[in-house]
Amino acid sequence: MTSDPSTAAIARLRGEFVCAATEAGFLHEQAPTILRDLRRALIVCSLFYLMFSVADVLALGLPGAIPSLLARAVVPVFAWAGLRHARRAATPVKAAYRVASVFTLLGMLTYMFVAWRRPADTLLHGTSVGLMAVVILIFIPNRLRTSVAIALSSSLVFVALAWIQHLETTRHLVSMTMLVLFANAFGAVAANRHARLWREQYRTRQVLTNLSVRDPLTGCYNRRHLNAALLDGEIARARRYRLSLSLIMCDLDGFKAINDTYGHHAGDELLRRFADLLQAMTRESIDTVVRYGGEEFLIILPETRLDGAVELAERVRAAFAAERIPYNDAALATTASFGVAGADFAAHQAITPQSLIAVADDLMYDAKRGGRNQVRARQVETGIARVA
Image (cartoon, rainbow, N blue to C red):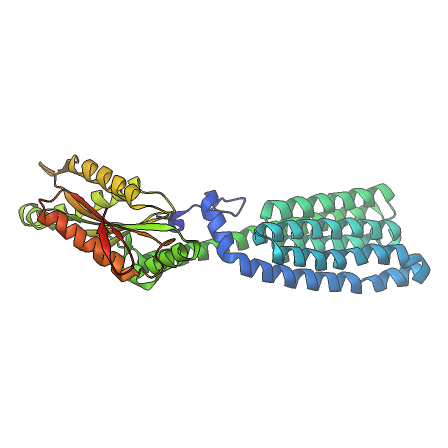
């Protein structure tokens, strides 16, 4: 089972999903986009940062501008090293955000050095700092609160430096301060809006994805998703890492009689409660519950040996047999039959999804023929199956 991002809330100020797991899933999906945007932003910002060194030469002369030029050169050098690090990192988004933070902080600090060496251009520097704050907040991908902290703190340091030097009139300094603060406020609001819209688009995609891969009645995955990729992917993983994998096929006993006696709404309620029980008793984000068809469900158990799957099936069987589901003036109750197929891909590599499902399905019908409310299990091997 997996958590459902389609209903996840987005924090108003942070612009991130409130649920940490949902935010992590969002960042994992967006990692290629974040890395691409970071590369583009760092290259463009580094080029423009170097191009403005012409103003240092014009203001200070070439010999006097050398310290400022060296300070500016640090920024593109770090951008190159940071991008290499982010591409190779095990957690690329976290690495990308670290690189963005250090790059923006380094850029602001070196610009403070440039501004200190050119005090006569305070108003021009104020415009530049405001623009740099907007770039940090909007153009360079990073966590919103980190970007706000770097942009605002750097801007305040520059404003304090300008007021300490006080080479401009008070009226000009007040206007410059207001401009810098406005640039920070505008950038923060725009960045927050972008972060929220980005996540709302992701959430909308999840809604559409869930509609296509999940059963609307029970919330379990549907058979189309199972046939498209689900079981094939789990078997490919088990085969690659030589792991065990088990399937449980389960079917409600006497379901038609309940529909005939109480109506289809009662049957739907029974299916929902059984699906809720299956999802509650399996491992979140590891096991998968599929509505296979009608009142039949399939449970995929990665890294699970046959004995563990049988134990789970017995617990589910006993729990469902004890269920009493209120419906109008009646209490619905029935049982379920289970077929469990296990495979060890460390020993047998040629087992197919179809063979596993076929064995689990046959075992489930064996349990029904044997009296229902039972669990039948078998270990599947290459070309043969033996009773566990």
